[in-house]
Length: 194
Image (tube, rainbow, N blue to C red):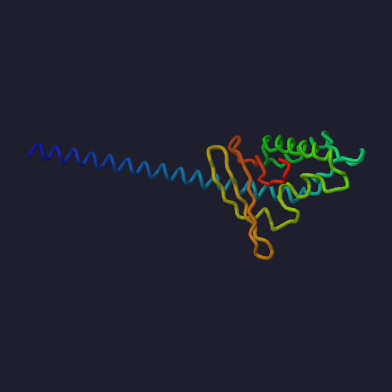
């Protein structure tokens, strides 16, 4: 009888321990899900916030300000004005230094192509808006549906827009978390210059 009571007590203790472990595991899973939801919301807010800012500043940001067509037969890059352009992007508070360095490299690669192109032709890399990733405005970017996959402090996000005739467009962006804030780190727009 004494062995049976000991066996019963041991089983009960084991059962309670397993149950508490499951409860802790569920709480951890719920916490991870809440963090993922917070990250997803923050990423969507970053993209929507950036496009709200961008749409309000797009005229000032125009790439023509750092593309010089006043010398010779080819376009050239004005580095000082490119620096001003990148500083204006940074002032949004929604882009990382990584994105700015990528943009600087991108436009330097464009300039190498321009050196062999007639300046009266559409210049390489500038046939579409780099952030909208389109020649024409498709739909309100600040309200498009955003989905994301987060891996540590990096995320891949997809912004989905529906055109006026019901066509669906997906645009990909990369973000990174710096100081607890999600920032745009790379554009998914391919122009043939990268």
